[in-house]
Amino acid sequence: MAGDRYWCELAWLGGDAAVPGVLVDIDGDRITSVSRVETAPEDAARLAGLTLPGMANAHSHAFHRALRGRTHAGTGSFWTWREQMYALAGSLQPDSYHRLARAVFGEMAMAGVTCVGEFHYLHHNRDGTPYADANAMSEALVAAADDAGIRMTLLDTCYLSAGIGADGPLPAEGVQRRFGDGTAGGWSERATAALGLASATVKLGAAIHSVRAVDPASIPVVESWAATHQAPLHAHVSEQPAENEQCLAAHGVTPTELLDRHGAIGERFTAVHATHATPDDLELLGTRHATVCLCPTTERDLADGIGPSFAARSAGVRLTLGSDSHAVIDLLEEARAVELDERLATLERGHHGAPSLLAACCHDGHASLGWADAGRIEPGALADLVSVRLDSVRTAGAGAGHVLDAVVFAATAADVHHVVSGGRVVVADGQHVRFDVAAELGAAITAVVEAST
Image (cartoon, rainbow, N blue to C red; front, side, top):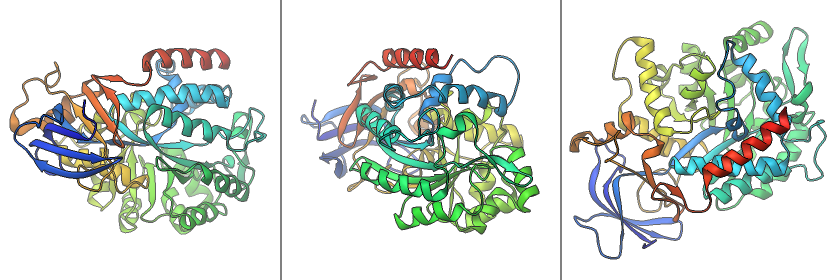
């Protein structure tokens, strides 16, 4: 199969409809030309169905994948689920995390994800002391993404406290000691050392875990590091009502307002979730040209609530998508959930069309991770192509004028049959070309779950 020319039966080039007969020429990791050609040239690989740009998973905690199917029984909330997550986090070491993350990123590749934003806070050893190599866990994640054939933005996360107390930040305890560097200065020093991991397929970003875990005085340290390195800056924002209540009680403002007060919110900033953001919060985010990353499958799995997606977009906020806890890894499911959940909340249909949801999956997601040159099928862009079947039981019968709707509102990750990431084929005929993802997931998850019990 030719690796430098692809003829797409149908392709999404960013407009309101699929375009038939699109020839894409690739040199190395870049698209060099895009043209309309009625029939496939003999020297081009033929991509059936609809070909999309590579998708970006803008919010991931790779180790959470091991919780899938194990945390759904009984009653509870985000806070009870978190205890199970902490037990798992306490068991991981660099080698076991590499094996697990490699399989998780392989699953992402099979779902059409060509770039992941890994919100990484599992930094240190089980007792909270640094490894001999302070960024051993980061190195494990970077190697895992490379093994799986996808790009990564490692969002090195500052996590300093257990929560907001009446008299100030609560000290980290238990497994939380693995997450923290003691001070924001300590975080900055370690994050700076991690810059050596950057490459053609890896970028370094920064993250403020939340206003619960990073005190106001430390926020500017993280923001300054991100500004100095022109790096993306992400933060969990208003995921839970309790977070808003505690922040208002301690500081007199919402989490969004607190972050803005200390300079964190701007064009490189992404508020993850923003489920309980107020109208004023959304206006502020829009004014600052910030982004909101929605994670609907996780937000509904954890009973977090339905995020204000249409209100955010109406305020000028860019939307991106993430699979977060990986209850499901399927960016098409995340995309349609944005619209379908909005219908449940408003009792009205038609807030987000397929093109805007695809933009959230593709270009806007990549841009929020620092890859503004990805997520589009156009000359000069990174050569990422994701082909989705139109002949499966989910997509068969889609009319010519309804292909985008059929893919966004009916297709699943199982319909992805071919993935090119940075010019390299990583998925062919629906299977990862490098390793058996299902087998590696099974083995890695079994090992880490046994270690946590």
